[in-house]
Amino acid sequence: MKQLKGRDLLGTADLNTAEITDILKLARQLKSKELEIKCNKVLGLLFYKASTRTRVSFTVAMYRLGGQVIDLNPNLTQVGRGEPIEDTARVLDRYLDILAIRTFAQQDLATFANYAQIPIINALTDLEHPCQILADLMTVQECFGSLQGKTLTYLGDGNNMAHSLLLGGALTGLNIRIAAPQGYEPKPEIVKQAQAIAGDRSEIVVTQDAIAAVEGAQVVYTDVWASMGQEELANQRIPLFQPYQVNQQLLEHADPEAIILHCLPAHRGEEITAEAIEDERSRVWEQAENRMHAQQALLASLLGWE
Image 1 (cartoon, helix red, strand yellow):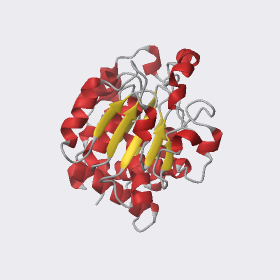
Image 2 (cartoon, one colour):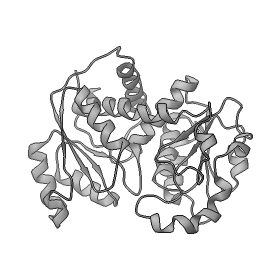
Image 3 (cartoon, one colour):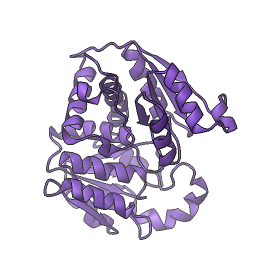
Image 4 (cartoon, rainbow, N blue to C red):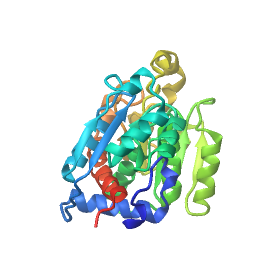
């Protein structure tokens, strides 16, 4: 996929429909071992937020490509002491072949991209989580064969996950319904962007009605009620978000063949019950595994495999 070589992935909509389709196809080929790609490159991981799946999946994905990984822990590098992003970006640009950043502000990611020539990947910001969405789309595709015409319902906080799901669904013909309490909906500008991208191809809905949102859905998806950096708000949110919990009663309204997804980590008993996450319809663990395959495909594409 030469058209992606050298590009940044700062948000889901940086990819078009054909490019997402190609990445997902490559990810399936890598997962099945139908295809093996080697590129002797160096990936840097600059994570200002805690991470398990993103850190490990990116590391293993790069090793599988025959490359190397450098963990640029902010607590052990000068960025943790206030070195300007502009300076850090221009130095890392001369050492690395590609850089994945997990941070708070989307603008910081954009600044890195402005001052570095190497591809910059959004490994999560407060605004978006595009790499997770690639794995989510891959998982839905594995389960149903196609994304178009299927409905994914996301319940809970209208956070970075909700934003990327809206955009990813719009780009691939997947109907997206977001059910969130009043005042916790996704950003209106992201909803409008998703609706504009979707056109007549898919349905984009934001509602406060959890039951109506789940009705007939093929995918039921949730995330923690308080994202990283909002932990002090968790307890006060529980009563407000309780109607959006993924449990057996709510799942009765979904399609009988519906699958359950969660981007993890999960707070069992809050946004999802232990019974639901362990249900035979749960594809949470396949979803987590697919982070590695989707990111391996993404890395190979941005580095320009032949």
